[in-house]
Length: 105
Image: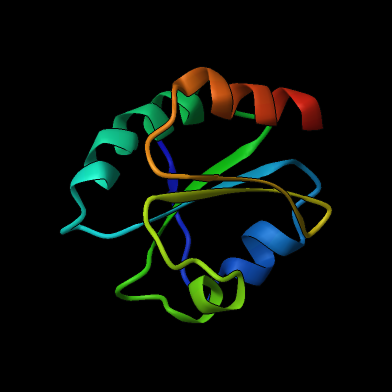
């Protein structure tokens, strides 16, 4: 299951991770976010132990959404070594996300 990422734990879970990290920036009211959600959950299970996969609710956690210029949701950022290495805005196929992760493994 995807972990909950917040402004409070972002540095520890994302920026200081020794594994690739996928962060789904989303909101409860966002229809396309609900379409991406199950895909993120699937990826979380498939990459368990190899990558960190989490969701950040932009309504409750605006600091990092603002810092990374997230203006449209869903936005999925892929981090490696604390840096953004890939970005996907809107609904994209699962293979796009997994390809981004595989590149970083």
